[in-house]
Image 1: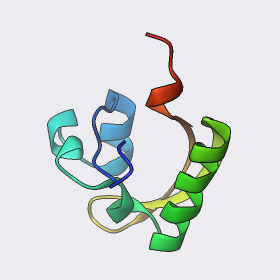
Image 2: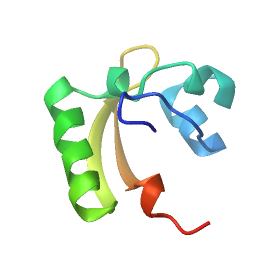
Image 3: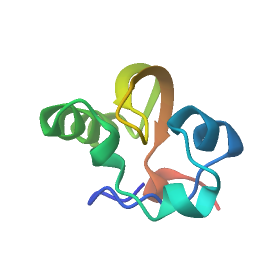
Image 4: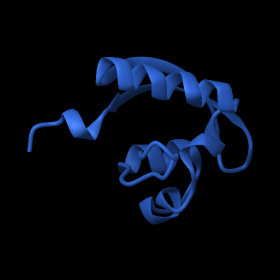
Length: 83
């Protein structure tokens, strides 16, 4: 995910959890649209910026149809990843 919420990659589990049919559909959506609030997204981004990685972070998200889903996420700041 980029800082503007653009999803750049997702795995098949995310596709199913969010109720989509393909990774391409998920990647065409904005990550922040799945969160309970914009404030949740801002706080999450700040944690990733400060720590470089957030592991086992519990999130309340919304599926494609609007139903709530609770996930445990791992987010890594790409600029800190070794290539």
